[in-house]
Image (tube, rainbow, N blue to C red; front, side):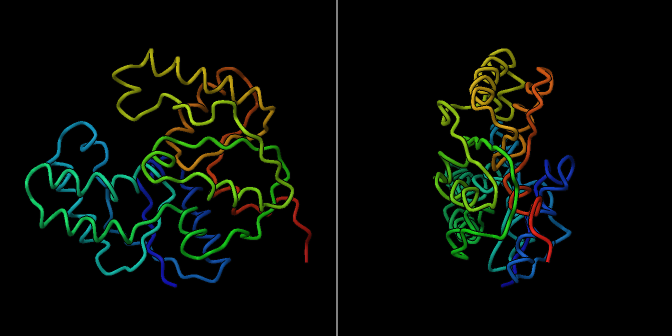
Length: 247
């Protein structure tokens, strides 16, 4: 299958190892990954801030850039949620039902990485090995917008050597929330500290999630506390062959 990689701004600028991991896993499974170089920001920040016209300009660009691909995959639940939900609802709020229909069509072709593996490819074991104690944080967009709960956990449970531990009150928001963390920094940090305390209580070596933005927020708190907890995207764990037997 040919898969178009939607890399996202955060991953492109700060976390290039995450999309590399996506490519590694998909190629390991025998699929072709292509990268449309014309892609830019999906417009999430603009739409979340209320700049619908500006956001929809970027949405239209996204639709044009990825128009020729049957499958679009991204390691970001928040950006996929933007494409799948915010594009069409924003267009309809401006009275453009025809454009909303076009956005719904591209939304049906756009998948978060773990969702694509389990729901489309019907794969639960990608041949990964990662001998560590791992906690998984379900981000708000992955859990509440995309409805992803068991897909990433199933993939992690099938990683050789990995011990998956549950975070107390795991569905609580970490406090990042994009612009929320900037406009309401005190509240954001307080929420993040609560989340980090729950993560720390698990005794996990590694914290993972489907959004590097949320991991950055929690990771900053973990770093300042000198906790030693490593922050990784789920895709990076699924690409790992650490501790695997050599053949």
